[in-house]
Length: 182
Image (cartoon, rainbow, N blue to C red; front, side, top):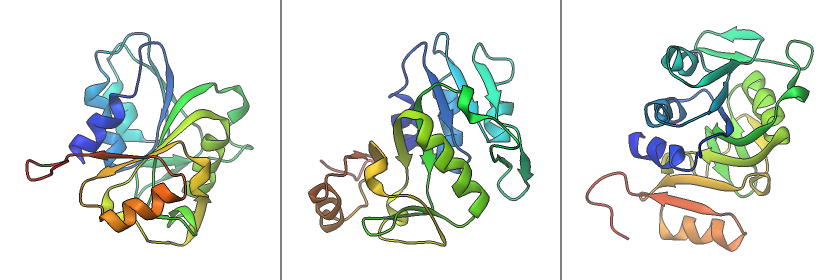
């Protein structure tokens, strides 16, 4: 997950406004963002917000209900107005990724928050290790054609890679250990 997070962070440019979702991979992005200039991070992750306190990064945490198990904030329009946010890039997590059902999650409130972020973001990246592929879990967040790229690891089978790329899904495959080969 460390190298997936590093790959995600490498897509961030100085001066951007990005969203970092709650999740283990996206949480690890913070250490790779600290040298960025004039960066704004919007997040629903309390650990992400805490990691960035005291840095030169502007942090906006969405308002709403605390989800204790994920240490995240889930929100609806009546709790937080998403209309005012201008997000260049969103980094979203997923519990399931499939061609048929798209990006999915176990929690309805997390899924609703992610949908809202996806709808207002210019570019959407999904950070999902290979264990999440070809799985459909409880709640659909969005179809795969609503994301710009899925960042994953080399453990993804060639058949799965072909299945996704044949459907027009852009994958960024990241080496996560020294045994990975191109």
